[in-house]
Length: 89
Image: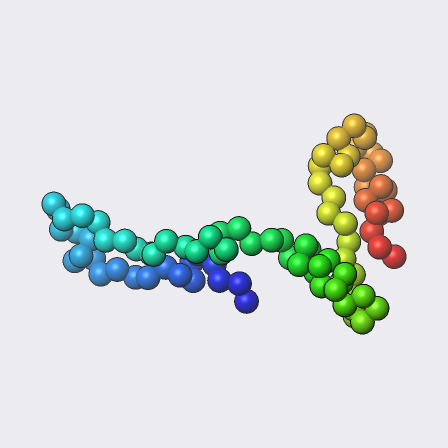
């Protein structure tokens, strides 16, 4: 499982936070750079598929990423059918 920011948060007692004049304690340490910028799961799966080749499980389908920019100049009535065509059968 990937670690997320809520998982790394510590509870701080109210008495340490409410004292005026003292600097605020750090709630969390600086996150490592590799945790901040993780590649999307689709990219990870595509790399695994390239490495394993024919040994990649056939029941795992990796569909292309379709964003709004892909259908930028297309009318709204046609977008649904185009998305259905892009899906792997």
